[in-house]
Image 1 (tube, rainbow, N blue to C red):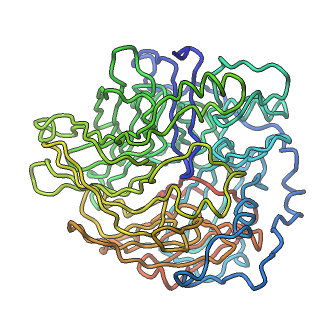
Image 2 (cartoon, helix red, strand yellow):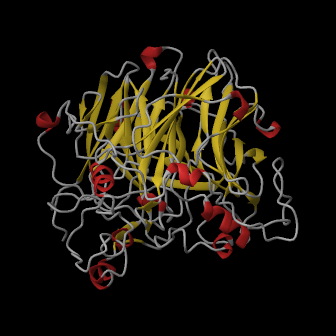
Image 3 (cartoon, one colour):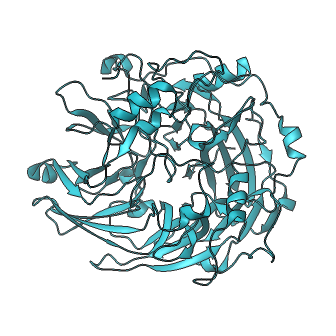
Length: 596
């Protein structure tokens, strides 16, 4: 139905931060794409946003406090039944979604973070670089975005060495970002834009191109850094300067099977460098007629050398919105969401500029999700590729998967599925009522009988959570600990924004329930994705630290907290008040390499 030569990608509006679906131009041959970065010219912004960083830094965006009491302080979360999101909560939450105060021009010059900005003590043995990626511009030359997934990607890094911190940043130099900064006006529509973003009267409903915002994931591996957005190609960046080198047709020597790569990947860490792997995937969102959707998993060793490539055909996967993946010793795993093209909405609303392109992907009530089991080893290939129905729900982010027994036929995976998905949600539509029932997400365990193609599931906790992270040494194995952003409310119905860091402790036994260790950042604070940073030479699964960036709407600050992973309830061992506003990001990466 769609013209393949025009459509690049669309991204569904999601309550859960970051799923995308893409319609990709047909790729060139694998050989032609191998080891290529499309542009040899480093793209860079050429102007400041409409409000300069200097002007923004002088202004406080903290909403007035309108409740007849003081805000709840950090520490233990509110007692059950004592608190719920209010209009104050929503106003505070909305206030943090605005442009960064960081420059849109070159930010590669390192800045040492002053000791005066640090409360507590940064562990001196914590050495490496924290990378984060997320939407950095939520207003483009006077035009506000009400869905932050359309914001241009901002990558920043914090290098840790002997208790000292060094900060750098740069916007990802995509074509869309560079062109708009040069023109000083919005030129390209995002997946959530309605009508013509240029502001003139002409609207072309047959233009299905949307801007590659490169704002979702980031990975540093084998000396190369990539900003990821699965609606299009990765953007290669310099890990030291964070300057963009260009769109990549290949990643670390692996030519992409289709011209896009997912923003999520898996890392299998190990004390033995020979066993370390980076595992990523691509999947075609729109297939050729009567053909399966092309899919490929890629593996690299610790040096960045390609060590495995596994292409697959995945039947009936168009509009399946594959955001994350799982891996075990014998299997690659993808979960296909119960979504489909809403043709009536496309013809009656999108064609007349009444909805965004992303909104024509509809969630299908009653339709099962599909767990695709894709063989990684000969043992799995003896069982064969499988497509196993899972209950109707929507998946963004997974936690981990592991096998039971030694024949590869029984697999357990833990995930964070949403009960359903409303693709019309945006910054303007969320109210306190949104957090009463509705589209909840819970830490959930799934048991997969691969041979018999059956599945079962059970909730591990009724605290709504998102952005799960874990110790990569336990990827694909039985594990105990998950770190996640979570609601302050723990209830079967009520929930709220991500205001707590939660450490879940869970047995691998069937029927297990999770024990929780919780730190509440306060009533006016909202956390981003936690990142586990392993302790060098650590023995226990939770030997390490958890880093998390928190936006405090009351103080109008962005704070980087460092927690001892064993003692989450004790609060952060160090808190770093950043000099600039860092809008809520999406995903990050802890690199043991030091990039100062």
